[in-house]
Image (cartoon, rainbow, N blue to C red; front, side, top):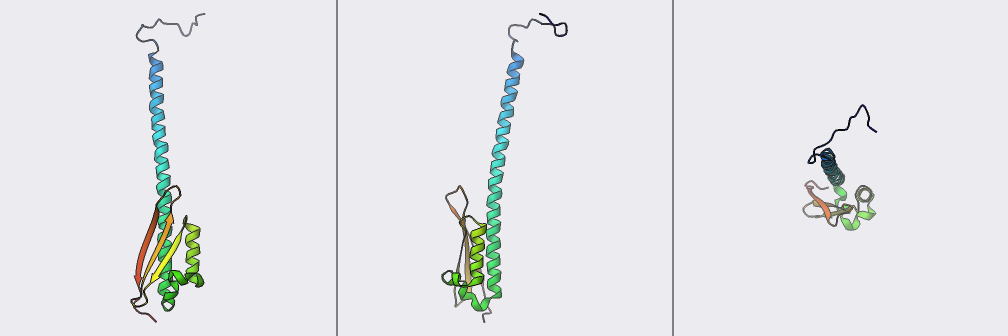
Length: 143
């Protein structure tokens, strides 16, 4: 039955189904574009997580060095071996474990020169290598 509103036209033999092919190509281009956006979003999320961990590590190292500057008389107690028995140092280790995945804080103290090396380490989820942030401070006026 023929519709009066849409009269059927005979198509040329080489043009039949061409608009269907155009629609399929347009859908393919759209799908590739959407997959590209999803990949970009995944990469941005991973980079954001890594940046957050780095910022947390810098905050921990900065805070611990600040605590050492204000407590120069007890500088040797911040060394990794005696840190667990000294409350201010233990708090920084607890904070590192809470904020960073596999977070660790290690400090080495040179009593003669007053230099301190603070190392904050963590392992990003889904990656096999460990990140390390190290900072050195020197306490010249020791009590």
